[in-house]
Image 1 (cartoon, rainbow, N blue to C red):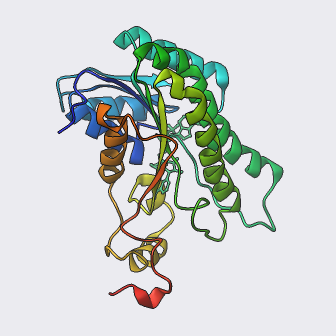
Image 2: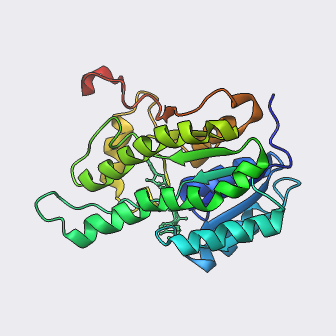
Image 3: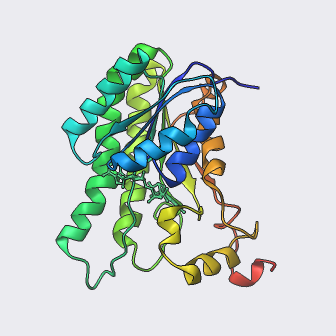
Amino acid sequence: MFSLAGKSVLVTGGSKGIGRGIASVFATADANVAVAARSRADIDAAVAALDGLGSGKVIGVVVDVSDRDSCTAMANAVVEAFGGLDVLCANAGIFPDASLQTMTPDQLTEVLDVNVKGTVYSVQACLDALIASGRGRIVLTSSITGPITGFPGWSHYGASKAAQLGFMRTAAIELAPHRITVNSVLPGNILTEGLADLGDDYLAQMARAIPAGALGTPEDIGYAAAFLASDEAEYITGQAIAVDGGQVLPESPDAVTP
Ligand code: NAP
């Protein structure tokens, strides 16, 4: 089995949901883990929960990934605390809904700023440290929504998640000479605080669409991210892996056995 012990890992959006699941998998595997998000209270709660899962350090950093200077400060804080950075999980993202007919320019801008610019800024801010690592790993949290599927109200979100994959492919080429890999995990429906806010009807509708019969857990995404971050995954780059319990597979709703 591969080892992540002693690696230094930064998870944006690591205070809640999928990011926290990713952080807990790395922390349990004895990595040093930094969780970054906007809310200091949520960061502190996450650090308290993650601390002691493994033998690595756990720290929290305040960041707004849609702000380039904030991302630079985040990367500097992590490098100062851990002495370097081996893995960036660019996971922070938002998914407010807005129909195409009513979507305002501000709503569109907010989603693109956090999900697309936030990904690019996070990667740029961490590049020097990842290059210095000699085997840097970047794992993006995209989505099945956009790259593979669609859902009413999420045209801007789907565009942002597909944009991450476009970014990934060229970034993977540019960074390959530095032995940095860039890959994406495409979560299906994962039970997080953010998803729960969409309501019980949404959650039940999604569970019925998943061949595996249930929504995923944040740790399901964490295990995929951990593999892509491992030394053994060094020959995998520019790839997107759906982690969705088979949700994108059925040709019709009837193909899913209750
Ligand atoms: P969540 O529970 O709402 O958590 C989002 C995390 O991102 C929080 O830590 C949040 O903390 C942080 N965040 C949001 N805006 C930020 C900003 N501008 N700067 C820094 N941090 C920010 O969401 P989630 O369900 O875990 O989703 C996480 C990622 O997975 C997103 O990229 C999402 O698109 C993707 N995804 C989720 C699902 C799903 O089923 N849940 C499916 C496909 C893809 P603060 O609010 O304190 O900043």
